[in-house]
Each structure stands twice: as structure tokens, then as C-alpha cells.
Image (cartoon, rainbow, N blue to C red; front, side):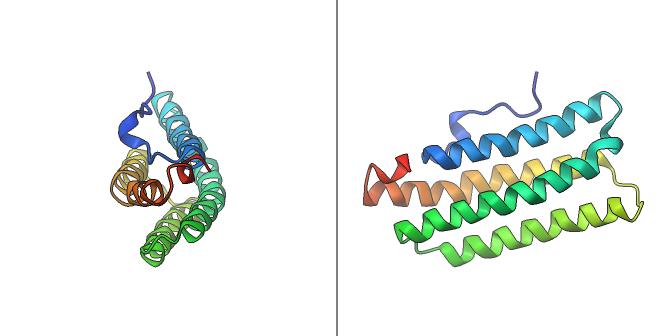
Length: 139
């Protein structure tokens, strides 16, 4: 059973963004699986590097969508995204420096942020886009 099960509660009702969020959830599930098998410390650096790379791609697509739809809170989203990337990069730097990270703490931070961000912040742009044009959410 995965650590995180995708559900409608995580949907922002924008198909492409939901697909991308599912990939982020899968990265967290991979880290959790490695942790459960005693390999969390071996793969945390790789997972964090993948997460930094993927979130840059995802956040860019998300911000482009928000700009395209005229979403009024785009700047707040950008700031939130930047703060997340900096935190994940700090984790990644710690791993590269040979510091020991508590994988469970990293995983809990990542899941807590992602869940809160999707459900509270990202859902707003999905609702905004749907209110402007029902087909906008199919982008």
C-alpha cells in the first residue's frame, strides 16, 4: 500500500496539473518505499534531486497556466514555490555535504507541504479557471 493514495481531495480539477501532482506523489511514495526497506538514506539524495528538477518543471507549468488564465494570486504562488524549492535544495545540499538527515522528517515535511499547498493554494487556481471557462481546466 502506498504512503500517499491519490484521491479527489488532491485534485485541483485541472487535468494536466493533476497528472503532474500525481508524479510528485509518486516520488514521495518511492522515498517512503525505500525508507520502509531500510534504503531511505541511500536514496534520499537522489529523490531530492529528482524532486528539485521536477518541481521546477511543474511549478513553471503551473505558473504559466495561472498567467494564461489571469489568476490574481500568481505572485503569492510564485513565492510559495520558491520557498519550497529552497527548502528542498537545502535538504539536498545537506545530503551532498554528508550530513545525516532523518528521512522520515524529510518525507513528512514534503508530504505536509505538498498536501497543504495542493488543497489550499492550488485548488484555488483550479476553481478560478473553471469559473472563467469550464474548458480552461482541461488544459
